[in-house]
Length: 609
Ligand SMILES: [Zn+2]
Ligand SMILES: [Zn+2]
Image 1 (spheres, helix red, strand yellow):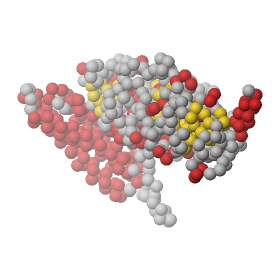
Image 2 (cartoon, rainbow, N blue to C red):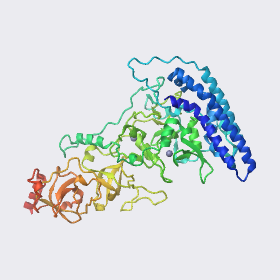
Image 3 (cartoon, rainbow, N blue to C red):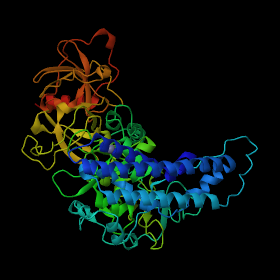
C-alpha cells in the first residue's frame, strides 16, 4: 500500500518530533536539577525542530511524486536503501529511555539530531534523483490495479551487523550483555540451515509479499496424508469417511474457540507482522535484572533486546530451534496474544488462524508454551498456508540466499506424522469441549491426577477440543483421559462438556435394563438441547438403546420416565439384564431397532444358568 512505503521512510521523523516534544514537556516540568532541565530543554527543542524541518521538506516532495507517478514512485522507493536510515532507526529504538530529566543524555540527543538531518538530506536527494517510468495505462476492463501487499518485516532497514558499530551507538552504561540473557531457554541452531535436513535436496521459499525475482517452488515437500485404519469391522462401511468429514468440520476455528475467546492475536503482534519491530516494540529495562528487553507496544510481552537485535541485524546467531523447527525471534513476537497477567504468555498459530481451520480436530487454537506452538507447527502439512508478513523456508536453503538469516520459520524436515490415533479409533470415542482452563499456575505445584501422577495430566484452556475421551474405571467418572495437540493425558471430567454423538441412538422398547455405576449430571452443559439423561450412581436405566453396542453413547430411560443419551462408560457392564420396566412415553412408540446382539447374549446367559 502506498501509505506504508511512505511511512517506512517518514515515520522516523515523526518519531523524532514526538520524542522531542516529550522531552520538552519533561524539561519544562522541571525537577530537582534545574541545570540539567535547562540543558535538556535546549536539546529537546533542537531535536523537535530537526524532525519538523525534515517533514516540511519531505512531505510535499513525496506527495508531489505520488501525484505525478502514482504506484510507480512508491514501488521504486520500496527497494531503496537510503543511507543513514538504519542509523536513525537504531538510535530511535530506545530513545524514550533518555527523555526524562534523570536519564537525559546530551550526547544521545545530539546523535539523533545529526542522524535525522543526514537521513533527511539523503532521502531528499534520493527522491529527487529517482528515475521513474511513467505509470502504465489503466487496464481496459476497468478493474482496479492490484495494490501491492503490505510491507514485510524484511523491508525494515537492516541494523548494523558489526558489534563494533552497535556498541558505538550505545552509551557505555547500556552496553549490550555479552551473551543473550535467555539463551539457555532455547536451543541454538547449530549452523546455517543448509547443513540441517540435508536429506531434502530441493529448495522451497515462500515469502510474502511474493516477489517475482524470488525463487519459488522447486520441489513440493511431502505432506501428511490422513491415515485411515483398515480396521472398520465394528462399524458400517462409510462411517470412517463420514467421521473424516465431520472431523474436518470440527477443525473450524469458531466463535467458541479459545482464540476468539481471548480476542485473537495481540494488536502489537499484528503491528510487528505488518510494520516491523520498530513500530511494534519499545526498549525497556527489565526489572530485577541488568538487561534491556524489547517490549510489545500493546502489552507486557517481551524478549531480551539483545536477542531481538541479533534477529534484526540478520546475525547468524539469531536462529533458534524448537521441535526441530528453526525460527527467528520475530516469529514469536508475531504469534503472541495480548499478555493479561504476569507470567502468562499465550501464542496462536498464524497459519491455522489464516485458514480458519486447525490441522486436527484435537488441536488447540491457543498455546500456553512456545514449545507447544513449535510442536504444533512441526505437524503442519507443508507448504503451510501463505501468511502476509511471514517468511517460511523449507528444506535446504542456499548459503547465498539473501533471506538465509531473514525469515520467520524454517522447516528443514517434512512434517512430523500425526501422533493422534486413527480416525476410526477416535470415531468410537467421545469428543469434549473444554469449559474452563486447566493449567498449572506460575509458582504453584504441578497438576496431579487422582493417583498423584503429574506426568500425564493434560493442560488446556477453555474453548478447546479434546478427542478420544475415555472414562477409566479407576477414576469413577470423575477424571477422564483424552487427546489434545497430539498428546494424551488426564483431566477432571467437570471441566469439559461431552459433545453429543454424530448419530444419536433412537429410543426403543428394548427391554434391556442396567444399573449406573457413576453419576452423570450434565445440567451445566451449555447445550441443553443435546438430550443428555442425568442420573445418580446405582440407578436403573430402562430400555437401553444404541446404534452399535460398542458405541460410547447409549440412550435410555430413568425410572422417573426421563429419556436421553448418556456415556456407556457410566453403566455397570455386569448389570445388563432383561427387564421390561415402565413403558416408554407414548411419543417413542414401538421399537424401531433392537439391540439384537445383546439380546442373544442375554438369552444364552439365561439359558446357560
Ligand atoms: Zn503484545
Ligand atoms: Zn496451526
